[in-house]
Image 1 (tube, rainbow, N blue to C red):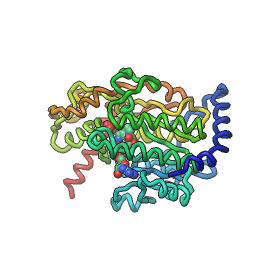
Image 2: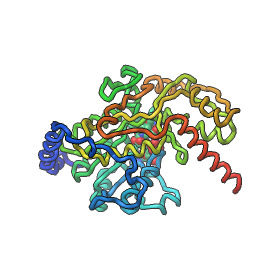
Image 3: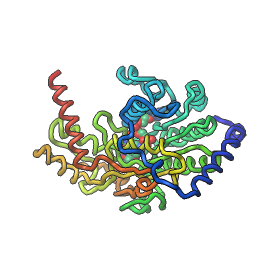
Image 4: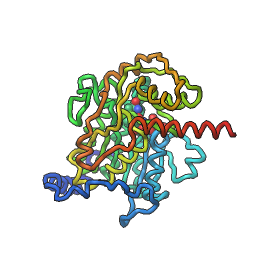
Length: 372
Ligand SMILES: NC(=O)c1ccc[n+]([C@@H]2O[C@H](COP(=O)([O-])OP(=O)(O)OC[C@H]3O[C@@H](n4cnc5c(N)ncnc54)[C@H](O)[C@@H]3O)[C@@H](O)[C@H]2O)c1
Ligand SMILES: C[C@@H](O)[C@H](N)C(=O)O
């Protein structure tokens, strides 16, 4: 662990210069909004990077639902060898051969520091975490990984002048937050260890920004829906599993009530937003943690949308009381007007596009599996 004195020494110079220049920039009116807008055709799919030197990127917890997709996106943008994926799990052959992979436990400060130094990391995406449902099943592990792990990441990033992205979540709100919609700034009293750890991350990141000049950036993700990766034990997992079930046998048993409304987003929008907020000039950001939103639906509404493609699709309900209680404490919608205003955030996928895309993927996969 970094000795507090050492952190102070290392960051005090950058803190004064970086933080004061941020204050100056943030207090100036913007002459033109254009530097804060990522063009719609931004070369996210190109293989070249227009700036002099691309960032050297580390992703922690990268073998979960979101990390491999993020690595693919960043490798297209910055080059394969500039993006290192890490986790404590063993990667598949395909992942291992598609770019740099290393073992990294976020609880081991010294090896994180070694990685950042040896690979000259300049951007870090901290995805290692336990999600809401698995966190409640193992509170002490969730507390370690989500809170102690975050402390290690904050210290190593501040010490080595690394731009840091930490995802937060709709789970950072609680039953006393406004639910429809939840604004960026409001009461946050979550009732899960996951939510508590994410509020802690939001506040610690903002504190390190003001105190040490750490370039901390954070988005509150909705439930993320992906076709080619599995969710890691959250409350919104049903919205991914339902597509596998619809494509496989046309029926699904849902563990949330039919009327449970939650904010959701397709993975490509989530990852694009993540890259956009990391690339946007610092002076465009009026805050360090933003809500982002794309759609909001209930299991019954999702089933109805699925029936437009799979007319016989059947949904039944066997409610998991733990997940239901969590879902009922979360917002139904997020107000993301600050992200739209500050850096031009806009989703590409609404519910109909999401359903068509997910079914298309699963339909194709099923046919391939049958052919084999
Ligand atoms: N998927 C979503 O719907 C969603 C929504 C909101 C926020 N997020 C956040 O995005 C991030 C990534 O989410 P995800 O869905 O990919 O999660 P996931 O549960 O699928 O993956 C998390 C990864 O963290 C790894 N991990 C666990 N302990 C670790 C440790 N000690 N050191 C290093 N890695 C460790 C796990 O092996 C796993 O691969 C998380 O911080 C999560 O809170 C996800
Ligand atoms: C919403 C999000 O943080 C995660 N999918 C969970 O349900 O725990």
